Amino acid sequence: MEMAAPVPMPFVPCLADPDVGPWFWNESPTQASKRIGMQYFLMKTDPSTYSAADLEREGRTTWDGVSNAQAVRCIRSMKPGDRAFLYHSGGESAVVAMAAIISEPRPDASNPKSWVVDVEFQGRIDPPVTLKEIKADGRFAQWALVRQSRLSTMEAPDEFVAWMRARYPSLKL
Image 1: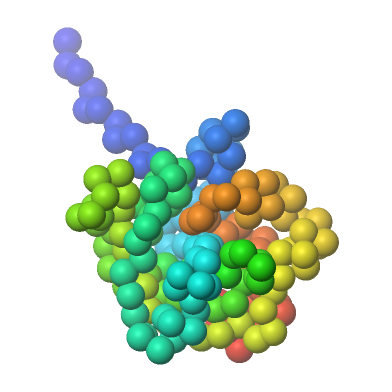
Image 2: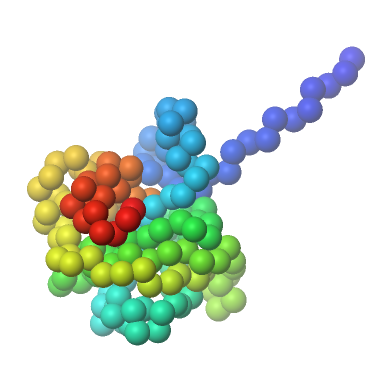
């Protein structure tokens, strides 16, 4: 009897909700085609450690220091050409800038549990979008930014990208 070739299993990058499962289990063909193309992420940083102003001044940096398993899965799913919303945590709690992913993810040489990616500054978001505004909108109640406040790196939902595109047409999202 001839055996069928194994069907490759999809890579599971991020879990949008670890209680439900991978985000692609219930995705539509439209969502799947978007997944294959450019993705959007949100990357948090404490501005007293490394701020959007630091990235703007330097132009590009290696995004490191991420050790949470779910956040590391997100970094591992990034690819050159993806975009990231930069979010200042701490007292500011706001989306303040955009960055582009410019390298393939790679293991962090200083931390075997972590991966890194290179990012390049793309522009400021002015005025910044506060967490209070995001929560008040109501459409993002299930997003990890709202539900998992300590998660440092996550996918940005399509609805958020569309909302930001409408608010800031000059960002060319």
